[in-house]
Image 1 (cartoon, rainbow, N blue to C red):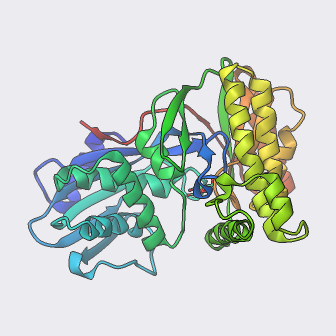
Image 2: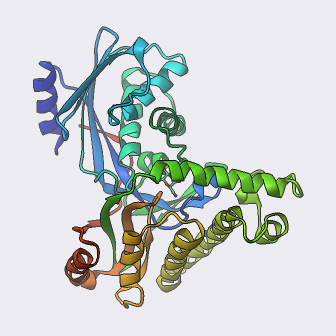
Image 3: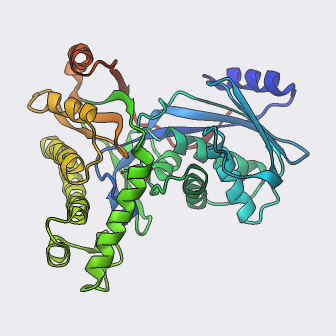
Length: 385
Ligand code: GLA
């Protein structure tokens, strides 16, 4: 939707004549470095050409009125009654952010807002982080709070912890806020220092294959993985007290401190290996060695599927289908897991053919309709004129 249409919807929803502020915040992909952000490791995400749009103007009272245009649902609450909403989920990504402004001592007034998004939901493209980032960015403007972008990213992340119950890392919000056109971001999740890498993969397209499933255990299993990593760190610390996170650990320490048959061993092994895989993949990217980069992606998938156990049969099927296909340089499941998309680096000339073949085969094998998105890399959160 363009900004003008959204303005019209805003005006008719709230019978307002003044223009709202409109902020756009994109979804994200991640090339490699999965489930490493909350282990203080590195990630390699980028913002994509699908975004959430948030149109908002302040009210004189303390009422928040939200309209989710795509769902045609409304929700209202007063600021002094702010709390996570249990029976519907979508308001939480905005209310959770308002709660962060309150916590920081901002004088928060009510507002009217319309939300629309073309980021597929539940597809592992961070549709929820995009909403929280758009909200944080817009309210920062309207409340004149002047928080820097890193602070806004952290506020959006904590909003998700507190209002959606998912103890997510920082990658999604960071990528949505800091994305740059045609670039991936190598983010060090410990120091929050980052570098932009031009994604110079001539002749390759990024194709997302959407399983169209989101298994219900995604959030609980996500939180459990975090816990298992923390348990692993605690075991390693018995011998190596200087290890603060899996970022500081290596395979020798793990072998010494955690029995190989323990599930925690496998979780930590994946994370420790993924840390190195990302660094190797970045080195390959710098040398324009896409073949090595692609191999690393397949290896990441195997680790996520077998050691970290966050894949599912639909994701495994999609990756297995493209393995050994010369037109597909690399593929793996992307994001938290248990559904969502695979990310595939595909030779441009072969994209159409791949989608045409894999879609009906997926239907036959799994009884589901596949969706495919060819994405390009765009700028992060910004105000739309
Ligand atoms: C989800 C979380 C991120 C990250 C990924 C896995 O998208 O929100 O913080 O942990 O899963 O890499």
